[in-house]
Length: 265
Ligand SMILES: O=C(O)CCC(=O)C(=O)O
Image (cartoon, rainbow, N blue to C red; front, side):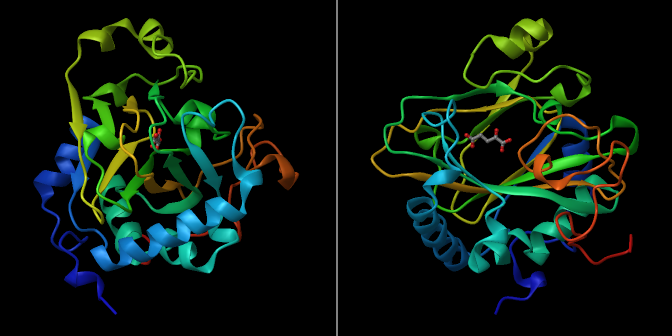
């Protein structure tokens, strides 16, 4: 069993410069946040789950990716990754505020899927009241090697400053860029990943993923963390719709647990 301090990148050895770079750019690449052996085990679990949980696949985006939302609630192996102490501690170090799990999802780009995930920001999809949400971010963990040809992420540098936009269509290449024309000329960064690496991105950072041009599935597990004080805005979302929440109520309890133990507790 690997202890957290043995991972190539962990909350104790990440430099202050790296944290500041994340906050300035809106994203960061961290190597070896889980071991390659762990990545292989989680890769197999994710692929197996995608075969047995067909009901998870989402209509319009199916060509873009196969999406398994909140798999941690069904699958004990994936739950280990969603609650991975190294990921959670790094997330809190980057965010600088106490965090809860918002939700996880496995995203598989099927072989030769031909479809990019077009530029979008994540936050507008989510039923979070802005005022109580100081920071929200995703860990996008590569469970296999993900070169650009297989569907890694491209970020628009510093785009997290463009807040308050409506949700964008991730099947439409023009939607976000028409909403925020400045972004057309802002620098972009594409980050190929080795299995066990991850990128973290802020919930307002514009990002896209290239299609999968290879014969193998691209398997990523995304853990999304929100400010521990986030409250419910009342807009529709598959995670909260079944929960009978009241507007303004904290997103807390067993669906949205605190998952890091550190100075903020
Ligand atoms: O992996 C993808 O295709 C897209 C991922 C994404 O948009 C996200 O993690 O926010």
